[in-house]
Length: 234
Image (tube, rainbow, N blue to C red; front, side):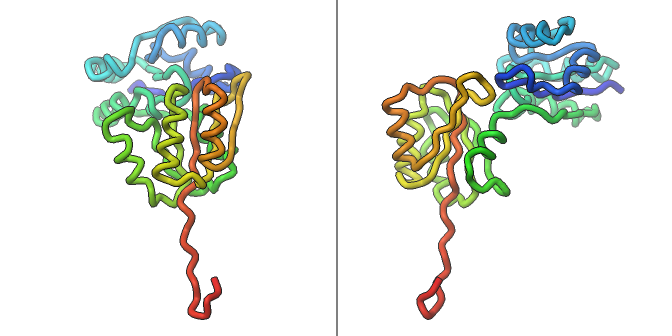
């Protein structure tokens, strides 16, 4: 039986695609793309003949059964998003679940993603962390943040440049102005930058410097309470 391949694509620097990903994209029968224009540019750069079908959040509910049926009939497919690993804040989950339930083998290639570089370069503990992706824009946003107020693991969020300041203001309210944060933007791109400090310090920076690009915000977990012995020593 044919397979579904989940293929990460570069999040900025086109050299960040793996040789295996290039081979898979070249050999599959068709490629499912979040935006065919974006993927066409990548395929042209790689010298791969286009065999694209559109697969995005607005049509995936209507097409997953048909796609799974096509794969089951013997045609190998690759799923890509505009950037990074499909399924991580991008379409992919529904198709993977449908294929798994249909007994179709799913192979996920390792590759580019924004959250891991941002986490590692934050300087915060990365042995345990939680990925929250994009917070709700309106309803449920503060409720979700308040549920994380006691989280001791390092937390990772994606955010739009238009909401970075508002997001940091809410972090100050929920986590406190002294909580440490690391804000990375444009990872792997020409103007890549990471700003570290307390929430108050980083908020002050972006209040005077217009946020531009794609953002990953890494927040230190709540400090663990130190146990105090009966004699008063920690």
